Length: 112
Length: 115
Image (cartoon, rainbow over all chains, first blue to last red; front, side, top):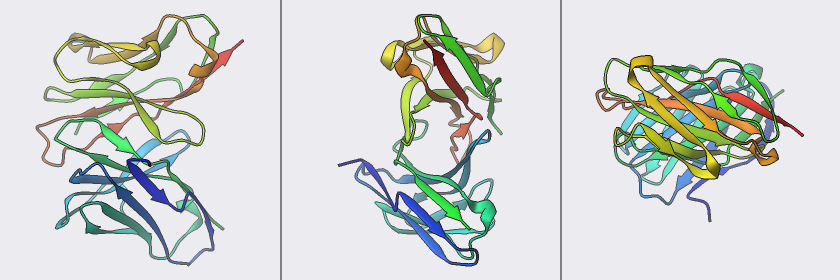
């Protein structure tokens, strides 16, 4: 089993719909992150969490919300999806400060 | 805040030729630097990392990178490209002096290997 699991892997949704992307990890890490990948823009940070009670906005948090249900689970929600939120979304975890991040396989989201 | 610059979104290299991907970082404090690779339809996988132990870092699949503080660079190289090296490569920087301890990524290099 993968260390970081994202569900679903692919999703097509309509404009205005609410959608949730889920992430779970078996690394035992406290730090979890949600990134968005767009062609030519690299990975941009949406939200991050250092523990269950700690949630922080990243550089592009508008239109998104998150929930840290447990140490191992971190979900990303789009309250009202819009077409420019079409992208590849990655969840990642890190252990100690400045260690490498471990990534899920990604969720390809299309908003029509 | 720390950041990285990767020039040239697409890089073409002939099979057997040198692979050179450039990464320059901006950080006011000692950085931790990473190179990741992304194969089609997959997540990011760590190639190598610099954590101040040694300036020349060897990674997986024959890749290596050299940290040069004077040039604020961490360029990735591989002496001989293989078809399997076709992928997207990302440089990233982190720093222990920032409370949020973010991992900031460059825009990536899409590597195409020409037979």
